[in-house]
Length: 165
Image (tube, rainbow, N blue to C red; front, side):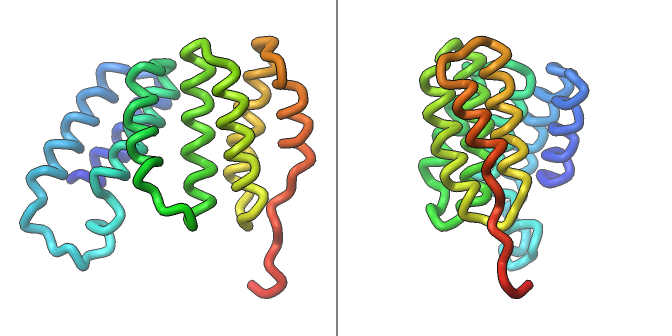
């Protein structure tokens, strides 16, 4: 149920449904709490945990332009996130950069996006770069100092392609 509700949360957020997203977050949190009898070896159980729910919560409130609700769970989750998971860290830092921008803290938004960009250029995934380019474009659109430079670096960056797939 926690996994299902986490998917519902994201669809509600992307459609702009704040109340629906909040209800689905509550349901996901409740379901995760009550999933104590689940087999910890099952693949879904290892994916959705409290840390992942914090990531989802932060992303949702970032999309809904609620930085006060987005920042604490993102920071909490990133503090506990493995450093070697560079792709995911880059993605989640991009959402944190968005939340910083929404909070009126453009310097933190640029610094956070720069960190995300550094990580994104080390992984063979285009998704983090796409997200960082979106953040950079928002910075440029808001006239943030450093935004054009970030956008230029993000546009020039390429995900490394492994020699053998």
